[in-house]
Image (cartoon, helix red, strand yellow):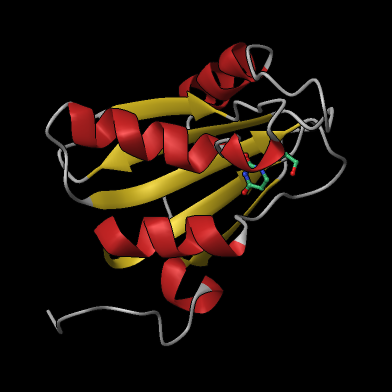
Amino acid sequence: MTPPLTPAIAEQLRRVLVNAHAPYSGVHVAAAVEGVDGRLHLGVNVENAAYPQGVCAEASAISDMVTHGGRAIRRVYLASNLPGFIWPCGGCRQKIFEFAEPGCEVVSVTAEGEEERHTIEELLPLGFRLAPR
Ligand code: THU
C-alpha cells in the first residue's frame, strides 16, 4: 500500500523550489528526504560558476539529514520546474542508495500535482556497496 503524497510535503517542496540557485541551467530542483525517524530534510540545487562545483538538491537534503544525525532514508520526494517527472541523476541515485532502507521510494511530483514513484532498487539495480548489509 503506497501512502499518498501529503499535501503538506508537496507544499514544502514548492516553497523551497523558488530558492534553488540555478542561474546557469535555469533548472530548479527541490528534494525532501524523509528519514525512518519521520523527520523531513529539504534541499535545493546550488549551482556554481565553476560548474562541477554545483550541488544537486538530493545531495543538499541528504547533507541536512546527516548533519542532524539521520542515517536512514525511507522516502525521497522530488519536484522541479521542468515539465513532467524528474528523476535523480546517476550520482544522486548512488548517494540515496548509501542511506536507503530496503524498498526506499523516490517520489516525483509535477507542478500539476501528479506523482510517480520507484524504489531505489529499480532506479539503481545492483548498486555499489563496500560491504554487504
Ligand atoms: N539536478 C538536481 O538537483 N537533481 C537531479 O537529480 C538532477 C539535476 C540539478 C543539477 C543542476 O543544477 C540542474 O539540475 C541541471 O542539471
